[in-house]
Image 1 (tube, rainbow, N blue to C red):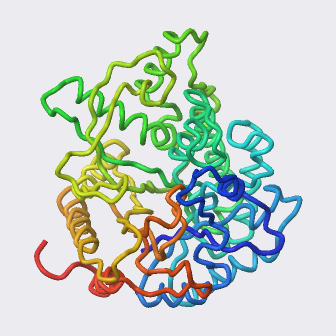
Image 2 (cartoon, rainbow, N blue to C red; image 1 turned 180 degrees about the vertical axis):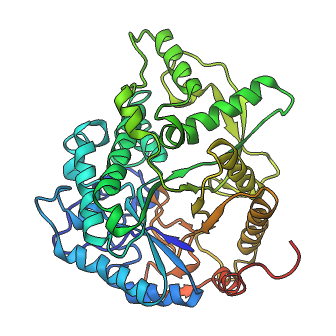
Amino acid sequence: MLTFALVSSKHESQGPCVWDTFTHQGGERVFNNQTGDVACSSYTLWGEDLKCIKQLGLTHYRFSLSWSRLLPDGTTGFINQKGIDYYNRIIDDLLTNGITPVVAIYHFDLPQALEDQGGWLSEAIIETFDNYAQFCFRTFGDRVKQWLTMNEPNILALLSYDMGIFAPGVPHIGTGGYQAAHNLIRAHARSWHSYDSLFRKEQKGMVSLSLFASWLEPADPNSVLDQEATKRAINFQLDFFAKPIFIDGDYPEIVKSQIASMSEKQGYSSSRLPEFTEEEKKMIKGTADFFAVQYYTTRLAKHRQSSNELSFLQDVEIEYFPHPSWKNVGWIYVVPWGIRKLLKYIKDTYNNPVIYITENGFPQSDPPSFDDTQRWEYFKQTFQELFKAIHVDKVNLQLYCVWSLLDNFEWNNGYSRRFGLFHVDFEDPARPRVPYKSAKEYARVIRNNGLAGPL
């Protein structure tokens, strides 16, 4: 039931990934120019992580493979056996202790060698990713039965290849995000088909991808423009990936029309959004065995007339912001009821699928408090909303994962945001793990299979 991003220490034969390059370029791209070179040191301290997992009493544990740890140049031309051994140990230890592994194949850390060849802007990566996914299925699929091909590809496309905030850090405003998304969707679909045709019969597993989704509400509930802006925002954020994969193989109509209209105004001869061929639509449709979603926060959406400026928000024609009464740590505003509304939307829009929440959590600022009573209150409120979603809305929610097991390297925020249920002292070479109060409370929820007291 717990998710953990594996950002851990280097070892021999591991190739560099784009985040290695990005964080070592300086320029305050990451908080205090921090890097993930050692982070939680989970490569050497997996035994300590397993103790934490057992202390919580988890039934499932979600972790991510590192592409460049397994295949240093991104291809099967050079396979790192030490990487295979490491993940075999994790998987085998989990199963020995009655814990089901839920494994993400790709989590933002593209091998630098592949980025040098164009990364997700190049169509060539579709076949390369499929080969990597097949390698993972072949190597670990005899024991791993729940797969995620990609972690938050919708965030990757926008922040990495459009805005350039995430690694590789080169903006392609108004074009790169759409091209990357186009390739990510096709790569996911192709790898799903590879599993379906080559591995499913023998391994009997399931494959999906995890999509990021905030909930959105109209800033003015009585404004038709704001209501339409909210629908557009959800279409561009979640449905952009979910509709092709779960419904019909193609982007939402409003997404296509918005980008086409804006492109025409800007003097483009065709839409900046690539089109799927009819053959590709058939290939993409239905390529997920469950709906995996990652929720953190909610925003209010307001219609905003676009200018001719190239940008994602201009294409959507919205501005979004939190309600002034909402509490926050950084970008995460605490809105527990948003997760219930999101789950209901997924149920109604995507034919009542089996849903996994593969990430949800609340950070502490640094320095954190071991007595994180307020943060646990946010978790309790969230669990109450999940209870309503299951028992009142009849949402088919089957897995909930907290982000995260340990404090870790949180992308641009470095170590300044602590999501872990266990504290990690990044100044201590031993990287000791110490439970916050929320870890002890979460263990009690798991033990009791629910919250004590009225909901």
